[in-house]
Amino acid sequence: MLKRIVQLFFIVVGATLGYIFIPDLISLLNIGNLPAWLTSPIAGAVLGGIILYVTTFWLADYIVGLMRLLEEAIVKAPITDVLFGTLGLIFGLIVAFLIVIPLNNIQLTFFSSVLPIFTIFITFFLGYLGFQIGFKKRIELMNLFPSRLSGKDKKKEEQTGTKLKILDTSVIIDGRIADICKTGFLEGTLVIPGFVLEELQHIADSSDVLKRNRGRRGLDILNKIQKELPIKVEIYEGDFEEIHEVDSKLVKLAKLVSGIVVTNDFNLNKVCELQGVSVLNINDLANAVKPVVLPGEELKVQVIKDGKEHNQGVAYLDDGTMIVVEGGRDYIGKDIDVIVTSVLQTSAGRMIFAKPKLLEKAL
Image 1 (tube, rainbow, N blue to C red):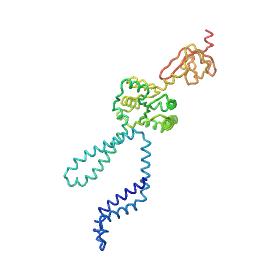
Image 2 (cartoon, rainbow, N blue to C red):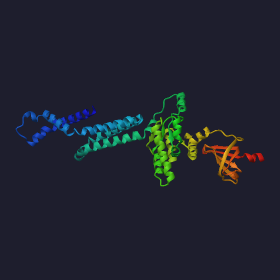
Image 3 (spheres, one colour):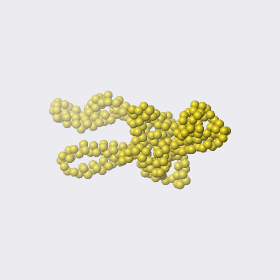
Image 4 (spheres, one colour):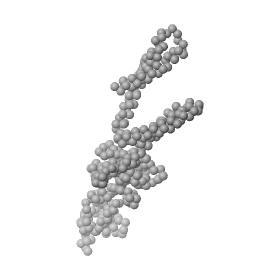
C-alpha cells in the first residue's frame, strides 16, 4: 500500500511538471505536423506522469524502505522524545517563517534572486536546531511545567519514588545498581547524563588494563539495564561546558531537574548533602541490609594479613566487611574465634573491631 502511495506521488508530480513544461518544450523544439491534442497541457500532463513513473519505478522500493526505518525508529522512541522533538521542530519552523516574512519585502534585485535558496536554508537550519533543542533539553523542559497536584498528592508522589534518579560513573561501574533495579527497590526514571557516558568511554579506552575493564563493565551494565530490566532509562544529552568536573555537573543537573543522585562515592555523597541535593548511596543501602553485628557477639574468621597498627590482623566476612582484630597478627592464616568490641558504620563502608576470644579468656 505504501509503495502504491509513493508511486502515485511520483505520477502526480510528473503530471504537474508535464502540464506546465511539456507544451512549452514542444514549442521550443519546433516539432511540426503534430496533432493539436498532442501539444495540449492535458497530453503533457499524461506524458509527464508516465515518464516520471517509469524513470522512478526502481526508486520507490528504496523510499519505502527508508520510510519503514523512520517509522520503526519513531515507534521505538519514548513518547517524550518524539513530543518535545516535534514541538522544537514546530517552534523552529515558526521562527524561520517570521524571519522570512520581512525579507520578502526587500526590493533588491540581487537579493531577490537568492532569496528562495536563503529561505530554504533558514527553514531547514532553524527546523533542525529547534528539533535538537527540544530533544536534548526535554528533561529540563519537562521541569518547566509545575505540577498542579495538591499537597497530599505531592507527598504521595515523592513517596512513590517518581523523582528522576541520576546515575554517576562510580555506581555504574560498581554494577550493583542493575541488581537493585531488577528487584524493584529503585523506582522512577533513571537518567544517564551524556558527560557520564563520555567519562565511561574514556575509561573503557584507557591504556591501563584495570581501568579499561572497569569502563567496559560499566558500559555492559548500562546495556543490561536498558535492554533487560523493566525500568525506564533516559539519556540526558545536555552539558555544562563552564563546569569541568563531572561530579559538579551531576550536582548542577540534579538541582536543575530536582532529581536524586545515585552514587557510591563517599565524597560526592558529602558534596550533595552540602549543596542540598538528594542522594541515594548504594553503600548505605548495602550496610542497611547487612546482618547486624553487635559488640560482644562472637564470630569465626580467618586472619588474612597485617593491620595498619602494631600487632593488628585483618579478616573479612563473606560480604566483604573488614574486621580489624587487635592482637591478631600472630594468627595470620588461621581460623580463630573473635569477640566484637565495636562497629564503625559510615557511607564509605562498615568496619568491625574485634579481639581474639582466647585473649578474652586469658584476661
